[in-house]
Image (cartoon, rainbow, N blue to C red):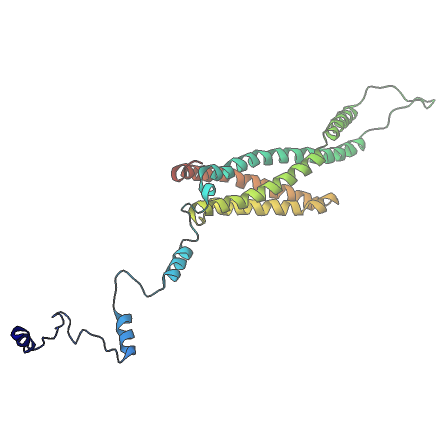
Length: 261
């Protein structure tokens, strides 16, 4: 009992806050605006003022949806090699289409040659009775016979239809693969590379379209359209040849920076 009463006489010791918490460090809860200001101005090296979603969108835009596995096999070596293989085949197909076109032109021009030669043939001599005198054919007549036989063989080749079909295939697959090559480059790298190969490829595509646009006028016998058609395709072949070394360099880079498949 005495012990209990003595304990009641001790003063109550209040708990003290730790020494590292001071009044200066405590926020003023009575003024929320100051609290918000202090929290917003507090610097943190691991964060930025931009929301995370905005930062991700910004990076996505800067990389232009670049590669990194997002497109799967479209970024691989197999798809990247489709463009050089197809365009290499189209180069030789262009030469074949040109040969067919030249043969069809020969069908038309050879008839003009025959017509001009016929004007040079002299009338066959006749007897006083009016009967023709048998004589060996003249050199001009022999040339006419030779050209006539050649024309018959050319007509059998159906070069007109074959050239038209070859040109249509070349235009369709050429434009498709020209655009496809640029898209594939974007899949692999996230951007295009302005330079001789890209610009020459664009010019070839335009020349294909321009040459095809002249066909209706050519079918009506417009000789100017025919000559322009030939000139455009000749320039096309020249640019195609120029594309070979630059395209080969790109193929080497494909093998260097891509993997199968």
